[in-house]
Amino acid sequence: MSTITNNVCYSGGADGADKAWGEAAVSHNHRLVHYVFKNHHGSTGPHAVVLDPTQLHKADPYLKIANQTLKRSWPAHSEFVSNLLRRNFFQVRDTDAVYAISELDGSSVKGGTAWAVEMFKILQPSSEKLFVFNQANDLWYKWTGFTWSVESKYDIPSPTGKWTGIGTRQLTKAGTNAIWELFE
Image 1 (spheres, helix red, strand yellow):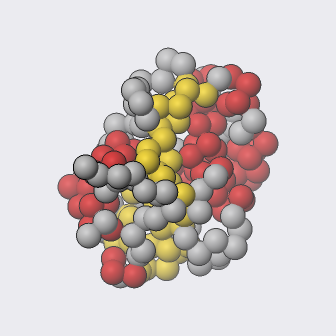
Image 2 (cartoon, rainbow, N blue to C red):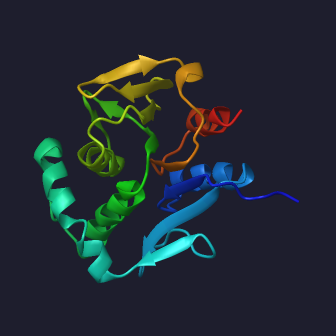
């Protein structure tokens, strides 16, 4: 019989990296929390935490600050997309470390994952536990506080404690392998 540890993975339950992180976490006896909202087609079941509109709007000030760096469109073009971005706040709000599978575009992470990464930087400005696996070149990167530095996969710590596993819906085999290798 396996026992659940004090380790917990926060994610969003979306197809791709979110679900892969969740599968890896559960298989290694980590608790799993997938943040979702009404009409979100992500994870359901025992790991889903459904956020109501009042909770979701608590993310707005952080998204506004994150957008000062990202320079994208906030609020988004639809309430559904805005809620996807709001959900990202909850994924990083109580975490000690973030692990993302995405691509880097200069100093920014691509896609919706960038919002979670930027909000983590706001919430944990001195953290040394922000990691991105760049599927464009199959390398891990660590945020130094100013820039991304290439890291050996052996220097990326295994997820423990309260951590966030997020990323692209277009997960590659290399991205999947990067997730599972962190637990070995």
